[in-house]
Structure formats: structure tokens, C-alpha cells
Image 1 (cartoon, rainbow, N blue to C red):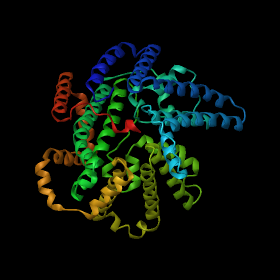
Image 2: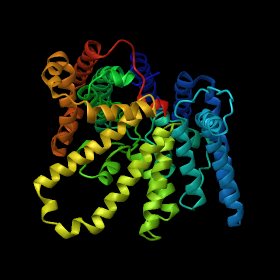
Image 3: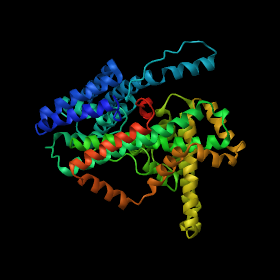
Length: 473
């Protein structure tokens, strides 16, 4: 069941209608949302729903054991139990075949892969429950007394399968409060749902067809075509994932809950540090707060700071998938962050006037964008070898004679590509005004807008409802 599918849109309309009669009563609201969330997850992962329920039960009770422990040693013991249980489940389902493959390669063995099904969203809800347990361990949060509240937090269907990763200390207080859903919340929620639907179902799904063709056989296409595929995928993954996040946040707003922003136009970033402040914000802040800072952050000297950055980003890369190409992706991002910190310390202060010029601003933006875009090739290519081949072809077999014929042959792709990037450079004031005005629109106008978007999707989107990219992570 996908946010961009007609089945979900109809079901959510029914859900919201019933919710309108129940949301003022905390118990009714909680039971109703938990039931719908578990049904939603069952439709995504079947009986692997039991893994989610098991994780909820383990950490609900472990949190009390940690909170009630009299010694640090006992607190640490229960923390380790929780971390091992949750990370163990994640590693079993996500990384078992990866470990078998690498063990076979090193030892020349021939153990068969298990080909385990990856429960949808396990990477997200594992990080989410770990943040709860760690916050209780550090004394930043008292364990919630209600199992229903914790189950509501963990299973809340808008963010369950692909984020944003929500902190318990931000979300649990909202469950306990008396909800007030006003016209502004509904308007903003509608705006975000429409925005996310356009990003995913119109931009991402249409342009993905070209990326699929080229990355299916990168050696069969020219350097120019591989370069365009790189630009296409960089926009596709942004529109796909931020589109999901927009819809998740919008759905939550319609229900009276705030999830927080997850993307902030990352392609306008002028350095790699800024990019990670704008891209997948809930993950980057999670990695910062629960890995980078506990390792030592910037408190243990410069050399250690760069080492901690590398470790954090390597873990972030490996979190995305059981493949060395993801580890490389994370490692190179970590290297980029370390180099940027060195730059800020030793180079930029010496020539501050030049580095504030328009020329440098444009250059730094272009450099950052292409650094990120080239690394996305490792994300999209089927294998590490295919990623290297695609990059090699871009640098050795570039032919700009393809430019005009390509525009003529794939005019709609070019229009969506240019428009998708250009929209991100629209000033924030204009975006905010559009958001406010869309939210204030009359119900009839909103209905017409929604029908128009749906009709546009039917005209442009490929046949079938395409899943979100981050479901595989």
C-alpha cells in the first residue's frame, strides 16, 4: 500500500473521516490509529509485522529496566541487550547474505545465500527505537508508562516505513496532549500531500524510466547519455524520497501531529556540510547525535574529529544497504566532510573577500552538486563495477553532438529535469506564500486541484504504481 496509489488515497479518506469523530478522545484515537497502522504495515510486509511488534514489546519493558536500575553497570547491561536485539534483527534480515557472500569470497567457501525478505521500514524503526532507549539510558527521557502510547509512536503509519526518523521525546508529548486540528493544519497537510504526490508520481516516476534504461546497461550508452542519467537519478532520488517525506508529514498534520521537516532543498547547497544539513535531516541528525557526538565529536582533537566523521558516514552508508558500494558512498561523503572542515580552518579565512564573491558562490555550488551527483551513481548502479564503468564512460566517451538530438527526442524528460532543479532555487518567501495560499483555498478549489493532479499523473506516470526508492533500505 503506497502513499501515491489510488488504493491508499481512498482508504486514507475513509480513515480520516472516521478519525474526525474519534480524535478528541485519547483512548479511541490511540486504539484506532494503532489498528490502522498495523494493518498498513501488514499490507507492506505481511506477517513480518510480528518483528515490529516484538521490537515494540522488547524496548517498552527494557526502558523500565534501564530507568529503574540503581547502578550504571546494570543500566549498561540492559542497554546492550536492547541494542543487540534490535541491531541483531536488522543485521539478520538485511546483512546475512552480504556476510555470507564476503565470507565465501575470503575463505573460498560455497555457502548458499538465504535470500531473506527485508521487512519494509526495519532500518527506520530500528533507529527510532534505539533513539528512545538511548535517551532513557542517558536520562534525557523517562520511559512512557503507557504501552499503547509507545506502540502508537513506533507504529504511526505516516513515518513507519520510510521515515522521517522521529524522536520519542518530540513525538510522545504530542500523543498525550489534547489535539486541536484547525483549518491551517488541514490546509498545510493538503499542500504537503499534493506537493509530495507531484514530486513522486509526476517527476520521479517519469524520469526514472530513463535512469532505468541507462543503468540497466551503462556500457551500451555514450558518455553524454550516462551524464544525463546521473543528473536524472540525482533529481529522481530527491523527488522520490522528499516526496514521500512531504506526504508523510502532510498526512500527520491532517491528524494533528508534527513530524518535522526532512528535506530543505539540498541541491542549492554550496558545500557538503550544508548538503547534509539539508538532505534527509532526520537521519543526518540521528547519526550526529547517536554516533558522531558519543564517539567524541569535536571534543577530542582535530585528527579524531575527522576519524569520527569517517566512522559516522561509513555507518550511514552501510545503513543504506548490504553492499560495498554503499560503504564507499558513505566513506567518500565522510572524506568530503573532513576536507571541508580542513578547508574552513586553513584556507578560506586567508582569502575571505574572494570566497564571498558571486563567482566563488557559483563554483562552490557546482562543485558540491557534482560531488553529490557522481556519488549517487554508486547508489543507482546495479553493481560496483557498473558504477565505475558509468563514470569512466562519462570522462572518456563524452560526445556533445548528442545534445540537440537528445532534447528533440526526449523533450518532456528535459522539461521535467530543468523544472525539477529550477523549483529548488525559488526563494523561500515565495514557497512559504504558496504554501499559505494553497492551505487557505476553498474546499472546492482544493478538490479541483487534487483531481487535476491525479489526471496529470494518469497522463504522465508509467503504468503501475511505482514503490518508493527508500523502501529497499
